[in-house]
Image (tube, rainbow, N blue to C red; front, top):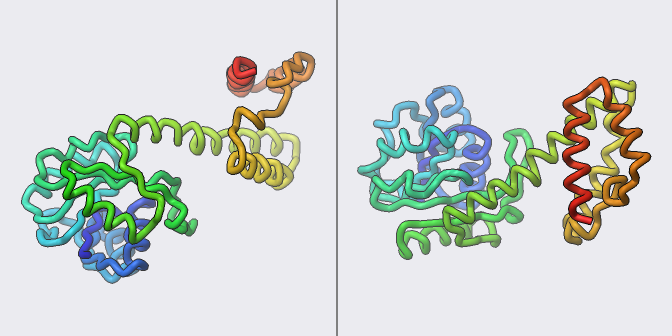
Length: 252
């Protein structure tokens, strides 16, 4: 399978390397930044290009792994390719590629950072295609990376992406806020890591609603008031605390 990777960011880097490691042939890497294209191309043994007009028209799969608002612009350069063109966005409609003959979506439901290794065997891959034949081709490509393969339409994929923002991005932001709270008192964030790990482990083995703890779920009004008092000089944190506590209370 010959693959052209369009993009050089976090998702593109992990996916291109994963395909390379699983015996796919990454033949080109495009990036508007020639240095970034060269870096990922070197890692995957591909040709680096920075002009979309230089894209090989005869690859089997074209992975568009760029910012959501750039997908449509890039798609205009791919109308003449012979292979299957997919984007990797969770929040973008498949039909953004509708000007292309063979198209679909190859969405990995995971958070990616270049410096952090990812084992794709644990990554859910959400697929969508404009024809049954193209879905079969996508499934074959996905099987090279992960056994966790799901056929998910645009509407459900958008909901998954939204849920992922709550489960990942917002949760990580809470970690950042907790870091600020302890560091203001000269405490080390390291002391919270075991608590974070235990919470994550529980989420793997039980439904979140069954393992919720803390003052809000107990309706411990005195503790809640004390916490709000500690946040008096940080009104934005106090507001977040109240909103989340009230949300937890509604689940009791």
